[in-house]
Every structure is written in C-alpha cells, then in structure tokens.
Length: 469
Image (cartoon, rainbow, N blue to C red):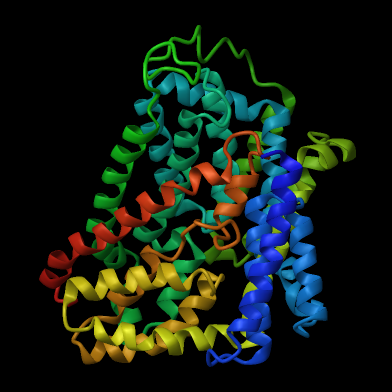
C-alpha cells in the first residue's frame, strides 16, 4: 500500500469510526458533549496511527472540532500551552539542544561508554544506573528524560547501532522505564508522587515520610528494575556479531576517543546544567518551580551564545511541542465534558469486586488504572478523581490507603497510544525523531505493564508483613 493510499484510508477510517461512535452510542450514561468529544478523539487517534497529517496538525484539527462540533472553548482545549509542564518542556528541550550543540552531550556519552564494557547489556545497565541515580535529585520526570534520552542516542551512535534498530529502541526504553521506576521509590523524584500523597488521609500522610515511603516501595522497585533490565536485554540485544544493528560485543575503535580539553561552550553548558539540577533537587528549600529553572537555563544558554536564534529554531522540535500542547489539553476537555466522572462511575463496581483478595485487589487496581488512563489523560487528575472514591473502600477492606495509591501510581503511565503519557512524549521528541518510532517502542508497553503488575503481586506478602494489608 502506497503512502498516499494509506493516508487516505486512514482519514476515511478515522471519520467513520468517530462518526459511528457518535451515532451508535448516544445513550451510554454520558452527556451529549462527552459523546461528541470521545468520538472526535477516536477519529484523531486513527489519524495519528495512520499518519494522515503531521501529529500537531491532527491535534489542531481535533481542537477545532472540539470547538465547532462539541462546543468546547479553545481556552479549555488549548490550556495545555499554559501549563507549567509545557513550559518546563520548552526549557528542557532547549537545554538538551544546547548540550548537543556545545558537544557536552557527546562527551557525556563517551564517558558512559568508557565507564562500562562495550556491550549492549553493560550499556543498558549504565543507563539504568544513571537514570536511577539522577532520579531522586530532579523532581520532574519530563526534564530527566528530555536530558537523558539524547545521551542514550549518543551512546547508541558511539557503539555503531543503527537509528530505529532494536538496540537503539532498547537504549531508549532503558532510560524511559528506569526514570519511571525510580519515581515510585523516591517520592521526591516526581510531582506525581507528591500528588498521590496529598490524596491520602492526614494520618496516612504523616506515616509515609520519604524514608518510610522508600521502605514500603522497595520490593516493587527491586522486582520491577531487575526484571525490566533482563527483559530489555533479552528483547533488544543485537542478535549476532556483525549485525548491521551492532553486536552485543561491539568493538568500537576508541569509543571514548580523545576528546581533549572542554571547550568554552562545553564548560558554560556544564555549569548551566549543574545549576539547573541543583535547583531542581533543592526545590523544597527555595520554592522555585522546575519550569522557571528550565526557562532560566534557556535564557542563560542564549546569553552565552551556545545557541543563536537560528540554532534555536532548528535544534528544538517545535512541531513536537505543539503536538504535546494539544495532548496536554485533553485532560481539561474531558473534565469539562464530564467524561472523567462518568468513567469513575462505570468502573466503580469493578473496583469494589476486587476488595476480597489482596492479590486481586492490587493487581486489579493497577490493571483498571491502565484501562482508565486511555480516557483520563492527566496522571494528577486521575489520582485526584479516583483516590477519594477508593480510600473509603480500602479502609473498609483493612488496607492502608497508601497501598491503593501506590498500585495506581505503579501503572499510571502506559504509552500504548501516543497522547496518554506526558512523560513519554518529551522522551520521544527529545531525540527529534532520530532514535525510535512510537509504533516500535509501544509494543514494549505490554511487557513493562506486565512487569509492573507482577511487581505489585510480589509485594503483597511484604506489605502484609508491614501491616499495610
């Protein structure tokens, strides 16, 4: 099938699916505006999958249809562009571009390659270690992946892996999944952890300071990290020596190279990055938002001449940022249309039916979270909507509400479809379409989700021992 035929077929399929849903599902307990919004989203998803238009263009079409067909004001559907997270990504993408243009990213990649053996398994271990160490220091998952993923790309290129090949996919996923996993061990690693903590009763919040949180989360993190590492190596390791995608035991001539002394731009960029990381890590002390830190770093980088105006236009994936802005606005659209409350009401009986068995309870909450995240696209909004419903259920079942929140948090970030994960989007676009395709790495979401669910089940005896269940 030629590209033009595929795009036409995708356009027609999206229109038929969206219109069909609107016409055939008018009485599902959701208001007319909600049905219209879901139909428009279904059509947009098909267009994104088929590549009918550039992703951000499809996002703009969706926003226009929300306004014209469903009556959702653009101040709601475009609210993602006013969010702190979107502006954090602008700054983080710029910092990543500055690290590449200054040569600092290449130097860092060489250092990682030099520090571990020149094998795929060892480099994956290095990226997992780097992501885990940096994790608790920076409270923004989006900022971490935006900086670390370009480094993974540089490592893959230094090892001779082809772009979009399976080894490159493995390196990309090593960073992304490790950043996600460490977020569950250290509450300071993500604002989502603090958001979950805030939904708990006051006495439970007092019980789970950083140390007790980490102690309770340790079995999940250890299981998920070890099994995820083994799965990544088994799935994405180059098949044989001499493959075009690189071999497991790659022989690269002087992989670290003789980089020589750091240039002035590298020193300036290194100072800016270290200052940004220090400010991110100490946010509770000074209260400066991560987006302000990122934008200040952007300004310092421009003032130092690391990027000029032309470089800024060319090095930052502005089309990706436009698409991310439209995706971020979906949570506001769904809240306005009543879709989130409708979904909670529909799924409520399923949550209640799981309360009798501790294993089914935590695994079921995780699985239902994955399903509901196709519609409730904001992680924080999902926690704020669902947790008040589940806390009384947990208390009645003799389960500490922290376990409920943690089970949701463990499975709250699927990336089956491109719009549903606000951390995956900056990870994907921080490498500007040069490393992986979404369709390829989305397949691993099934594996990682299964690992997260299995880790929840494996943690039940430990939580029972702690008296949490």
